[in-house]
Amino acid sequence: MSLSFAPDPTELERRVEALLFAAAGPLSLADIAARLPEGADAESAVRALQTRYADRGVVLDEVAGRFRFRTAEDLSFLMTDQREGPRRLSKAALETLSIIAYHQPCTRAEVESVRGVSMSRGTLDLLLEMGFVRLRGRRRTPGRPVTYGTTDHFLEHFGLASLIDLPGAAEMKAAGLLDLSLPAGFEVPNPARADDGDDEPPPDTDDAPEFAQDFVSQD
Image (cartoon, rainbow, N blue to C red; front, side, top):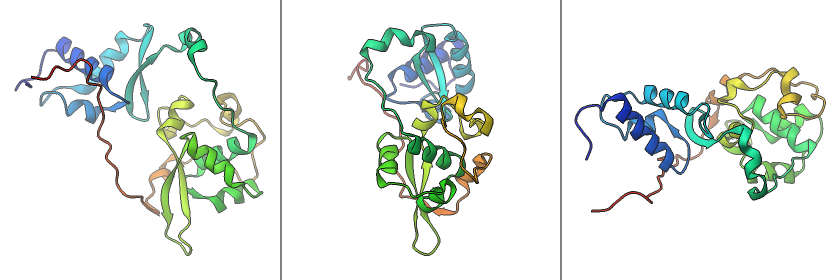
């Protein structure tokens, strides 16, 4: 039963910590606040937890405006034997992913125009399968071509908090976002384009967070 008054900061941190631990995926501040007493300062509690966990084996990370616990980066070697080897992207896939990230939302034809060559169907299929790219909707132009944009998994994989943090052209190779020469016509990122409303959006989906129930008792 929730209390009618906001708990003290220590208790509030405990509640937020429990929510983040039990969540099946990253939580936004709105997700967290929805499960706290009215008036509780969710952001202050999250920031306090980030400080508390800064030097621990598990850290509180922010990805695409959402928060989740993950293993500290310098301890990743401990999990090496238990990890499945990551799939490597071809040069064509990396170039396509980079163009979509910097020009989204964009169509297949627009990607091919920037690259200057035709793109195989398998390249987009691979990016969709790996969760780096998603369908954004359809362009309101003749033929209504499908547009593509990046996902939160893309931000997570490349360690970006948001599209605003995309590296500049000179930093792309160092960030692992591009490992070949930039194609003609490549532009500096304009993250505002990602939500410019030019496309017809796909149907709404239920984004309510899921929580593990292992430690929840049922009366």
